View 1 (cartoon, rainbow, N blue to C red):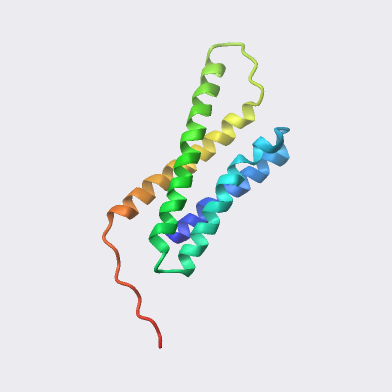
View 2 (view 1 turned 90 degrees about the vertical axis):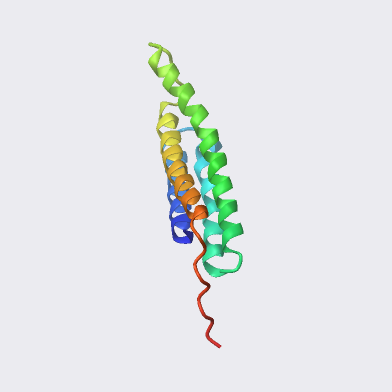
Amino acid sequence: MAKWTVLVGTILTIVGILSASLADTGIAGLFPAFIGIPIVALGALGRINYDQRKPLLIGAIAIAALGFVRTVGDIRLGLYLISVGPVHVDHPDQVVTHSIIAIVCGAYLYGGWRWLRTPPRPQPASNL
């Protein structure tokens, strides 16, 4: 799960950097990177420290849950504005960006939920 955590955080960080550089949204375009960087850090620490892996990855799952909840509201508003007709949406590219964030975070939340429900594996033997 720690490998997937680092991968998810990296994807979110790349999406944030691309969103900020390609769209003229300012600091708000970096929102995925603000979610992705702590997730990468917690995943990397979880890979290093086996004893603290579960609490660290639960923290990463909590950050992903906040990102998912935050973006789903924006997606619903954006889709509503697009569907009602000729309404000007300030940043339609943000609807796409937030959709990517919601899909990535939602998939990670599902995987994290399944990981939390599985029984723990035995700890690897340490080399003395």
